[in-house]
Length: 463
Image (cartoon, rainbow, N blue to C red; front, side):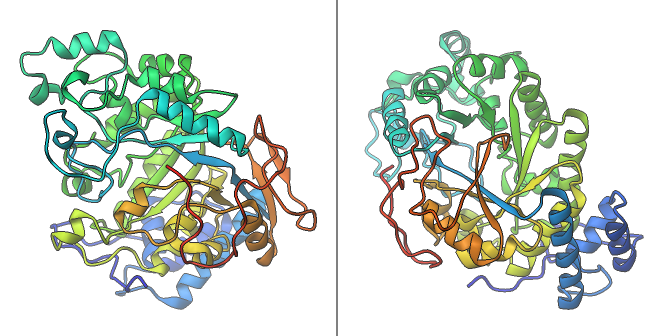
């Protein structure tokens, strides 16, 4: 059980959240449908900056309002997708303190004797993983990987990087032959995973930066090349908290907020849909969370290409932030609920807000669907990032699991495409249930069913 924490507490000289607004006025603005300010969102997330801790009565008022807004905006459907995670490599030297997914890239070198549990999949292996999953009915593959020093966009990029005097220190590059396994190029990985009509959801802003490092290439041109190789949409992860003073603490080696925004704009200019995320519950204040939401909303005002907002609750157990004593927990359940609710109220231009069973488990994930969320992720088949950080809630949910859980809270289960443009309502009485939107899907259950609703270990799938 995650312990309660004070979301306003910090040891990093961050200004304590304080606004010229009151909680009551902010709630009234939200009730009237007036566009909220950062001060409004700060008050709602804190249930008032006039007192310490979260006020349970005020919290319930925010949650109830957000749930009504969800019903007015998208109705009572709860969507999910049949998908697979195929992360290419854990090799990474970025050093983010919230992450335990990575392994030092040095350990992957051909002459290294460092023992590690990481992996690198060459393009052929990535393609085989997707092919196997297509036979099970999936139609989306999500790929988010470490920043392997041998990864380059294409052959031209390799030449550019090799031209530096000291590529390892100047542009985080070593040639593929330095490693036991060649990850291929980004374009080769995209081509390998884009098979059989699957929707390829990959290349975060951080990965796009890595795919153009050491050059003067624009994000739009990089994403156009990736799209030509098979990329269909881009995940707006690597966002963490889009406030640079927070990034300086938790991920000083990552791109800045402006670069994250530029990458997302480049992806959309290249014709790709994108998602948006926020990873919260570590060192940031509620005001930082509100400022992050404003970055997302402003980006959507300019572009209109964001399909969903995905709140990611920080899993602390195996991360450097926890091991080094910087944090002693992740966010509380109250904070999870308020982030979802305020996202629904603040992001008036993003229709879909996701609840995560991977982060929260089934029971609390369902609660979040009554706090403003309308999407419940996907089947996953393999989830490595949260698991390596100490997540406890498994890697797979079947369609029967989804139908049972969603109908239990009185909502309608709906299978959706990645972009939400194709949707299929599912009849709970017409089981067993399986995907039908995939290019090889015929309604057959993806894997043998298990008991839904538990927070224990599910049947795991091969990586």
